[in-house]
Image 1 (spheres, rainbow, N blue to C red):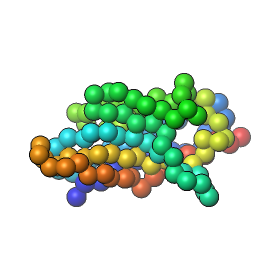
Image 2: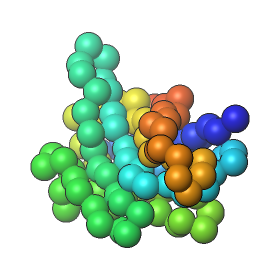
Image 3: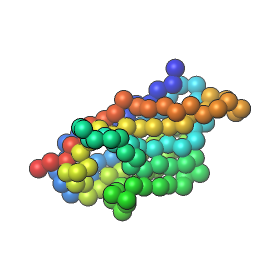
Image 4: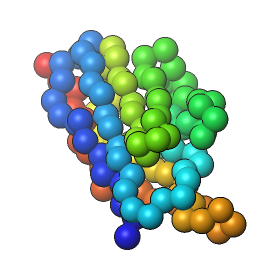
Length: 121
C-alpha cells in the first residue's frame, strides 16, 4: 500500500539542469533515510545521494558540487537538483526510502519505478 513515484526526468543538453521529485504515499509513520540511485544500461546500480531525516546528506564523488538532495518531511517528498549535467549522468534514476509504518515497527526499504534522465546534444 506504500509506493514511491518519481517524476522530472527527461532530455536535457550538457550543462543544463534538471530537478527530480519523488513522492512517497501510503500509511507512512515516518521515513528515515531517503536517497537516489542510478543505473545505466549494462552497469551496476550506484548510489548518487542520500539524505537522513535530520537533513544530513552524502553524495557520490562524481556528483559533488553539481547535485543537491533535499526533502520535505511534512509532505514525504525528496528532491534531486541536478546542475551542470554531463552525458555520463545519463541513466535511470531510482528513488529509495526507509519507511516506518509505526513507531515501534522496523523500517522497510522501498524503491520507485525509476525515471529516465538523458543528457545529450
